[in-house]
Amino acid sequence: MIDLKSMLPEELASFFETLGEPAFRAKQVFTWLQKGVTSFDDMHNLPAALRRKLAERSYITAPQVARKQVSRLDGTVKYLWELRDGNCIETVLMRYHHGNTVCISSQVGCRMGCAFCASTVAGKVRDLTPSEMLDQVLFTQLDSGEEISNVVLMGIGEPLDNKENVLRFLELLNHPEGLRIGMRHVSLSTCGIVPQIDALAQLHLQLTLSVSLHAPDSPTRSDLMPVNRAYDVEELFNACHRYFQMTGRRISFEYAMIDGVNDHDWQADLIVQRLRGMPGHVNLIPLNEVAESPFKPSRRIRQFQKRLESQGVTATVRRSLGGDIDASCGQLRRKAMEEKGDAHGDLGNQ
Image (tube, rainbow, N blue to C red):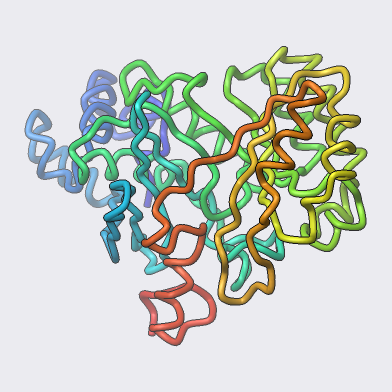
């Protein structure tokens, strides 16, 4: 069975040619898919015979809302979507003065093993398809009734561990006959897979690369993030400098502030040293507590910010959103897994 929503219009045209159908049908189907139809029967301008033929050979992805939490504090909405195979993923809708941002997942689970993250508790189950990533934007927009203007790939999973599907998703997201969300309105987060950062630089995309740094020194970062044992923080910063030189795009560095672990003055100074020679934005994140983690939120966020700024580094403190709705990435999925008694995240096969 063919996943139609993961296909670009020209690929759909080739598929329709194999069915003996005119190419203009591809554009009609692409338009319907981008509107969020869930059944071929909803494609009213297609002949009934063609709709039956499509149903026999292909399928339309359409996630179901397994849970939905709305923050009473700020209106942030967190979705737990159930996919067609029963697995679940999370998406978060955040409202800002500049527009609505949706934070999407790129994998079911994650194998990166970051010590402070709930997403990695049960490991990686599988990659998401381009259509499953697109659906998170599309169905969040449909459910909320609000237009999405910005997309961040910072949910469950490591985007560069699913790079080909992510790149296809970005093509679909940016397509002029689709949602038309431009690359400058997209942020892609990575924990620091150096070869993939270099490969991404070659594409000269106008998105914002966001690096999950969380510590500027190798001993601390290796304790927090196993990826640092494969690609040392020094290698990571060298890749970031190459990325900036090739693309001219400023990199954002995500930094979850952990009490007594990565919030020392000397670590702020080391960030300044490693950023020297390229512009960078450090986004300090108040830590969301995770039940399985011993880490606590830092009490030195403002001091850390001031020390960075005093040495010329742009540093902001991320506004905490959805604090009353399992705000930390992976928490809602983990809670649902526990309630189902399922250690692997497949909520549909009991």
